[in-house]
Image 1 (tube, helix red, strand yellow):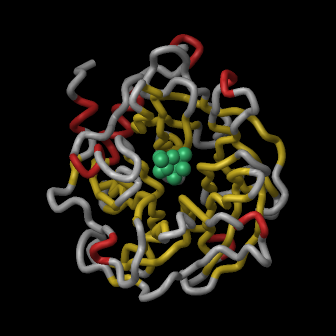
Image 2 (cartoon, protein in one colour; image 1 turned 30 degrees about the vertical axis):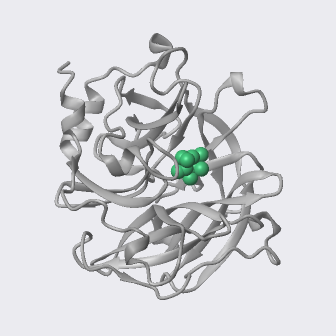
Image 3 (cartoon, protein in one colour; image 1 turned 180 degrees about the vertical axis):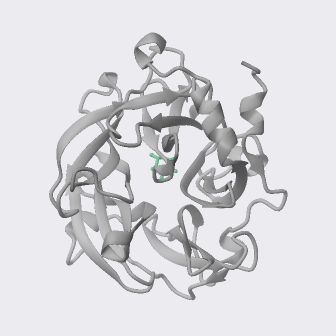
Length: 321
Ligand code: BMA
């Protein structure tokens, strides 16, 4: 394995960051961790905006080329609704968008920051202007959730990351199933955080929604490395079986992307790259990632390179932990 290869998979855009509070039409502390979708040929970002109270909401930004000339809603697109949804008391964070063709709608999984801790909520939309809440679907603490775009044996599937009470048990990616997006069950762990000195030891979480490829569901996940001077958020890849997404087939040993550029290394939270969305066209994957919890950056990779790279690592965690 060429150790340099992993740093060449994603190419950073030279004009990064592509969005920050400097472009925002109203005052905000930071804009980061945006979901992404292609809607009528345009790239739509559902951006996490943190206000000066520390509470987050979402605002839509649209661009024809997915990189420049962002048309940003002049005021918040989706605000937390603590009256109707008490679980949103301290804001809504880190959205992930999945197109559900069967429902002719987009589903947004997001973190609702409740008094009991962060939990997973879902809302749907047909136009990114009005949203219908499904509500809270997983109790706290649980976040980093996204839906698969299709049903498996008639059931919707969702990846998410529950956190056990004892931190030494680690926080892992789970999969759950639902007939109606509201009621979830058949919970099982699908990607296990590694242990010891690994870059993804102890705590991992889904980044962008699972991406369908001929070879399986491509999963981009973050690993959190705890160091003496704070946490480092880096990214790895996994491939789940196309027919049975409870089966982890491949997983990279090395991280494929980590904080390097200044805007990733310094911000409200240093050393964080945190993509909540990616889009695919003509074999190119476009990732949109929060950098240092302060701005949004953009990078591209070839889908074939990502799939080829993850397949060059034989899965099984048991061997690696
Ligand atoms: C995670 C989430 C993200 C954030 C990251 C780094 O737990 O809360 O929203 O970007 O921490 O601070």
